[in-house]
Image (tube, rainbow, N blue to C red; front, side):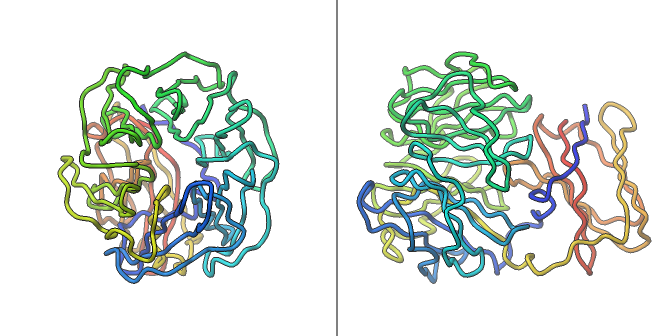
Length: 368
């Protein structure tokens, strides 16, 4: 079934055209854990030309979140309890965006366009904020101690990993606890978690040597990405390969979609990298491309699986549909209108973006 949502400023600023040669990889470096040095590094897409992007006002950085529509980037700091804000182009410190947190770790924009923040210490509640930094609520009915990974399934249930609890807990759309989705049997210290397009949950096991796969019912399916140590931080490339921070030797590994190791994209210690714990891919070539406002876009269901995109433009356009994990599932040229079949798409969230030679037009988020 197709559901339509109005795009927030956040989604309107995201472009999904694959990563260009002007793209960059940003890596948070946890250094010596609770002790410096700490930094956020920037690399070319081939892992070369490292440079220090942020070094000010860091205190055990945990995650990186760009707000492109604001021209800023947020960094969560476990030691200081702050989300610090920086210029997205220069990395210059701007201010303390959110304070008073109990060891903030991961940050993500949720399906409701609110900012979700995990806490390592304190009551472990998952907190929600507006993108302006205004506090909304403690979303979860109970806390998750040492929480350090979160994602949503196709029905927008929230899942949160507990590092020392060696488990993953599930919450419904209202934040009500649904119990453990994954118990302690197969995990030694989960960090990042994410759903793939088949609905399986993948879990980076920091104290293990792999990323592990669990089905939609939480049943262990086996190791997916192997040969890892202190795995933390994940990003997805346009060719469906996966980047994983490998803290045991200060590298970033790249794996093919079938789980085979391709390369160390960032070689051990490059740029002074000690312990990667967050990765972000950013296509900087598109930041200067204007958003088109001179034509309208409508998406309408024709039947159970076919949908039509209709525009008010007579120009040649490019339609792209991208999954929430950043994987492109459809690209096609058209004029005025186009019909596509969503039946091959796995259940989950998708984004639609339309581009011509003048700029881009982001329309709605889809969920099939």
